Every structure is written in C-alpha cells, then in structure tokens.
Image (cartoon, rainbow, N blue to C red; front, side):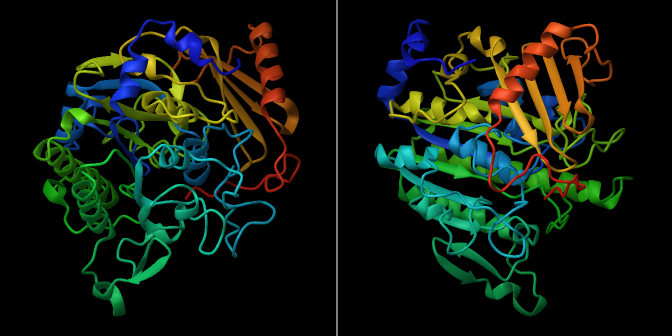
Length: 451
C-alpha cells in the first residue's frame, strides 16, 4: 500500500516523459456540491449540461473517482496536499480544538506543501478563483501563502453561501462589491469568478499556468439570477434553482473552453472537471443527483464520496473513453507533478494516475487501499480496496463491508462472511490514522454540520 515509485510508472511504457516535456497549462475546475449524477454524461435526464457532456465526448469520463472527504474543507485539504484524511492538516469543516475565529476554522500551516506551491516553484503562473476554505484572513493558510500568485473569492465556507455578498477577497485585499450594498443584488459572485477566470487566461496565455477553479455553484443558498428553462417545471423550488445553477456553471465552463480555442491554447491545456464531494440532496425520482449510490454529502458511503471526474487533453487523453479505474483526490498532487516533470514531496499518500489518464492501465489502483476518516457523528473510517468498501465506526467497534461490484447501494453487509478482508482493512485503518491536535478520536459524538 505504499506510494508507487516513478521508475515503476515509467516502466509501463507510456509517454510520461513526453507529457512532462510539453508542460501543459492545467485547469482544474471543481464544482461545489454537484452530485455524481447531475450531468447528462453521468445519466442526468433533466439538467442541461451540453458543455460538460462535450468534455466527456472529447476526453475521458471516470466513474470511480472519489473526493478527499464527504464535506468541503477536508476534501480541499486532501486535494491540495496529496495527503489522505489520516494525515492532512484539515480534517473537518471546523476544528474540535483550536482553529481561527468563532467557527474554529483550522488553517494550513507553513510546513504544509500544496500542489500550487510545487507548480509555482517549477515556473507555473498559479491562479485561483472561487472558494478556498483552508485559511482565514491573517492566518498561515491564505492562498497567497500556499502557492497562488493571484486569487479572487471567498476564504470562508460560511461566507461562500452568500452569492450576493458585499465583499470578496482579491489576494490579501478585502474588496467591497458596491452593487450589493444596502440589500442590493447587482453582482452575483459566480459571474464575477467566471469573468476573472477568462481574464486570467487572456493575461497569461504566453506562460504555462495552473488555474484552480473551485467555483461555488451549485452549493446553497439556492439563489440564482435566472431559473433558465426550469421555471415552469413541476418541481420543488430548490430543485429548480439547483438545476439552473448547474446549467449556469456549464454555460460559463463552455465560455472558458471556447476561449482556449480562440487563443490557440486548446491542445496545450489539460482540463479537469469534478466536484468537491457528493451531492447535498439525493432528489430521488426527479433529478437523482447522487446517482445509484447510498447516502449523500456528509456520509462516507458512496453517495457522499464519489464524484464526477472528466479529463480532456486533445491528442493525449483518449476521447470518448469511460474508465472505471478507482482513484481519489490524494492522487492529484503526484499526478500533476508527474505530468509537468515537477519534483514532488515525499509526504503524500496518493500516487500518480497519469498512466491511467493517458489511456493505460495501472493494476496498483485496485491493489491499494484508499482511506477516509471523519469525526462528525463520532470517529469513523472508510476504505475502498478494489471491489471492497469497508466502514468502521469507533463507537462499539462496528465494521461493515460491501462488495461494490454487486452492491453499489452498500445494502448487504458481508463483514461476517469475509473475515480476512476485514482484518486487513482494520490493520490498514490503524496504520493510516495519525493523531491530530485539532480533531480528537475519543471526543463525544456530535451531529455532522455539512457546509
């Protein structure tokens, strides 16, 4: 279960070194609370997502990719650091001990290395717009201290709920949005992020860039300037707004893809599209946002962790391919380092999945264990190991085991029938967890607060 060395990856015979030499631009767009089933290419029947669907036709769609966590901040911490939840700094939306402000937000520390820092040191221009969630103002975790040359958006998850906010952060400056003062609603934050995105690409077209787009839609509060074509649907109002948010996100993503072509950057840019965790509502029988999986955001069952992931890079990433290879956010840092020929860090739990992205196969993806933990509702751990999904709840020592190849809803517990699988998973869970000063294993259970 250790990290796979570079020499082994290159022995697969794929064009890893050639890919590194091209030093592509990297765009990593991460929607907020968009469910696995919210796009047409993942089976959505009602929400219009023509640009995301086109990305899937022109790139590779992955069915078994997992978020870093089932809620916002820890998922982003795993993505940025390449460390799973047993090691990464931020393991929940709010610290149980310490943290900044009355919301107890735990920031990244100076010793926490992010993928943006590594790419910045390798000569990439780094930019971000949307929601950060890993450092409050005047802490060690703000984006400009964690590898981003430029950034624009929300630092705080709660603040990000307000689409007509009266301020945003631009680097270390708090910028007042005059159009939203005194109860006005003239400046919709997502629209500002979309324009900033296009401007960043135009300004840095001559340089290799890493553009991280943790856009805030379709996260609630459910407010949107227009219900698009959904206004007359016989659905609950928040379903209509959710659908309109996804379509608006898709529209602006399409504008970004069109700009890449206009500027001649299309074949020089690898584009990732995903969500930060599972859908916040199942919306069963109408939108079916979570797809065929159990539970939703805030749970370590598949509905809370499995996310859409589509990757496009013309001529490099196979077009129209569907991959069932299992991987997760901890793999992103080593993958981008491999992709760009950038020296990484030894403090990662993920492995490079570049060979899989480029169309090859990696048997080690099914052989290794992917790990999660969470503290809301008591200390819980989860593992994906090939076809197996294991869940452990510390209170009472309960362990559940499911065969995902036959039971995607995780409805039939096979722990009693597979004692050896359970034994190996328990051993890995023990080894994977390192104590955190901010999250305590033996604290009394509290109800989860999904943000």
